[in-house]
Image 1 (cartoon, rainbow over the protein chains, first blue to last red):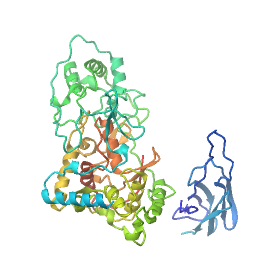
Image 2 (image 1 turned 180 degrees about the vertical axis):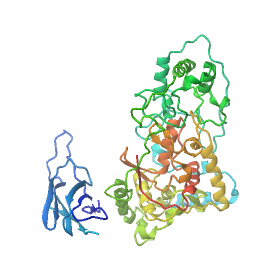
Image 3 (image 1 turned 135 degrees about the horizontal axis):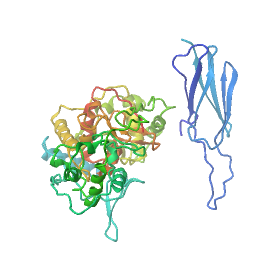
Image 4 (image 1 turned 30 degrees about the vertical axis):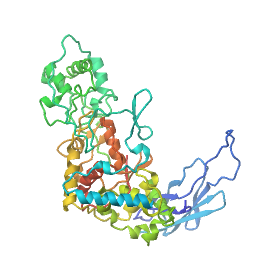
Length: 110
Length: 428
């Protein structure tokens, strides 16, 4: 897990103004699972997993996801948004230990 | 480490000293370095039952009475057998149909289409039998075809079901009774995908090199940690191959499998890592272990986009290719099948075996291995794919790092020569 926090973001190679664009993104993260002791009781500790994902486009939040431990290791998200103007798309992953990981893509029309 | 290294060197020298290029490599000189479940071992239980040690979830049945790809297995192909249909048995078409569809037997539907919405998925390797009875073939002829079709068609890909004991004479009589009920006219298909002759071809799973699409890429990249971490002997892969795996290993994988003089045999990356890894870093990298497969992917990814360029011209390569080709064409196992039956374009290639679309050997089947398997959410290298191909055909698999597999892999890989590597692949 040396790559923890590495974000991959994929947008289509050619986008026209006004297109609804599908974005695929993924972050390398262990997404710690609930552990139990020998008696089957849940071990109480601060599990490390991603609990919030926010997507901003042109500085405004487009969408945000509240996520739980039920999501797999190296979680993958796909969503769509309307590309109105050229600018920066940023996806930020927040985990329960306070770390944030960001991936960005330049939306350009060509 | 030192003593075993010396022993290997002396064995290799011995091999060079007494073998000529055309000699068959002595498989006994190679001790398998695969994980226990990949060695093809057979264990005898206290009650005398023989149990095969295989991967979790695979059959443990011992197919020891059927011949394998092992070079020292010189048993001949089962001889062609002419039989008479047993008299006094009355076939039941209903039971025959159930046997035809029974997935623990043939299933016959793997290769042949018959009517019925419950026939799924039917294959197209053999002829469509939907109207077979209209040909007015005799019961005795059909019985012989099922028992051992080589009497009439010496080069058929159909197994000799009766001869090999997959179906009993009673069961074959029921099957004949069922086949004699298949009269025309053929009914129009309501679902074109039911019929393998009109079914859509699989389209694949998108870009195999996109990490947001292929989890295999992430696994391979995680192996970069292993690449630069020091093993028990204090050295790491990166210590001797500096500059990152992607630069240091650029182009290396395009030449594998190849004959490695130090070990006196043909080796793929996986085989080589299993001896080179422990010999240098002290870290065991048994074939089929996750670490071995992940490092193999990492090394092969460094050559992505470069054309495959295995040696096909040296005397040693040619001898190995001839043996690999012989394995490809050799009929083995309970089904008496050869690789060629499914993967040669003049036989089963580009047809459906059940729901599976069969690859064409001449198109090159190896340059995307190790590959992510969407149905298993795991990465398989070519050897495990070999072992999986062979086990349902009713033969005991060899060790994953067997010389026989390495030379078969070389034979398959020469069809990829000149085509760009693309690892890891993504397949069902």
